[in-house]
Image 1 (cartoon, helix red, strand yellow):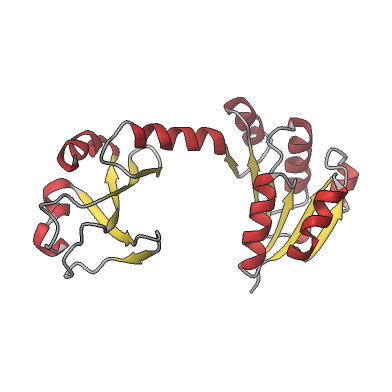
Image 2 (spheres, rainbow, N blue to C red):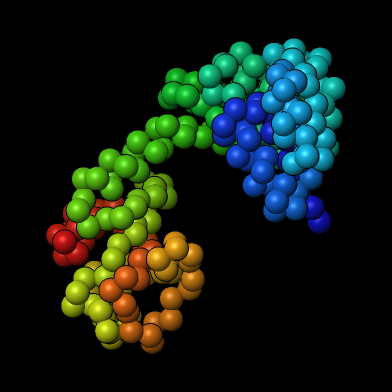
Amino acid sequence: MKKSVAILGLGTFGKYLTEEFFESGADVLIADNNDEAVSQLSDKATYAITADLADPEAIKGLGLEHMDIVIVSMSQSLEPSIMCVMVAKELGVPYVIAKASNSRMADILKKIGADEVINIEEDAAFRNVKRLMSAGFLDYFDLGSELCVVEIYPKPSWVGKSLRELRLREKLNINIVAKKDEELNSSIIDPNVPLCANDRLVLIAEKSDLPGLDKIIR
């Protein structure tokens, strides 16, 4: 069964979401108060509507009650974001995601009912600090208070050996779950196949183990 997704606000983030959801086969409703922005993406949406997203009656007229997911992507506009989240939850939308520009806005959106709040700038900054603080980590993704996902290249001593031979879970408390090729395409890693020097390994680790892991892979 197709997912139905409403994207309210067509800035850079909203445009990206519209294209991704539409290409994934979802029924997509887009809305913005800028008619030109709506027109530019109308061929990527099932429904494209120009509406005042600060007006509760206009928001109610979008038919959000029929949506599985509503994404409010106006992080620079607090009042319309609040109004869209409130109306979507009042209409019974199962899952409402809102984009915030700072932690204060994120707190407000959570308090008024957003099921998930995305702070893209803050998330990106956190990831890059973690990555840049380590010479060995290629990328970093937070998984909550204790776990994280890290991307690394194999140590020279790992090259030519399989995960089964290396026993990294037992020795280093890390779980390598996938690898990426030079074009960053992901695939499940075979524990019996020897590692190559250019394999970009995707692993899950406990945050408390990162300092020790960083020293090992440098």
